[in-house]
Image (cartoon, rainbow, N blue to C red; front, side, top):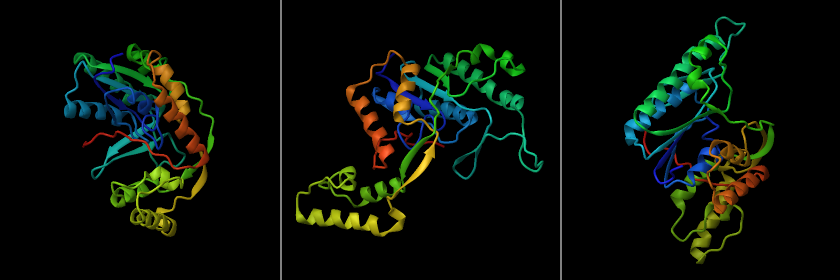
Length: 282
């Protein structure tokens, strides 16, 4: 697989989450990488994002597009400069609430798969179609569109719930650090783990003031809390990479990076990774 062009990935929280996913791991091996995934996204969002990405970046045969389609029962909408998503809407006993049926969702999603396949082929863009959920090829819509659906690789995850220690307000603390930190400050991770050194008493006092600020202000609290999360941890995504691109060789540094973040998540320690979101989009 050509890793010298640009890589663009698309999907839901299996693609972009609060920790590295298969997309971020694979992206480490590319010269240029953007992750267009979004938590809670449905297939309409994914389809629209690929078209927008092409319009913004003029994709060529040297680029690679990897798409992890998601569950069919998700409704995407765009309101006031932001995509929003409603997940798993099925019939309710209360008739005043939204309702639908599996056949209806298939009719909405499956043509998107077909249309995008034809679109990417027409432009000779390298692509991989996959999904973290199976699609029914025995239904009316499934039989009609089975030529495309059968090409979508099902990525199997271990979905056992993991009890993790989640740090609160990590992004806010990172933002504060970027605003206050000078060029000679130690890294944020070393500050939070109290394993840093400073080059002068002035900078040491600045760092101490920063630490005191995030300790005193509940808005910046970094106290961890136990939560149960069914999303695959980074090591689970590492296993998925082997299914997606079996021939891709990951560097030792990438493997160590994934392992370290996985351990920090389980222990409730601070971790940072570059999310590689698109620089601009609608």
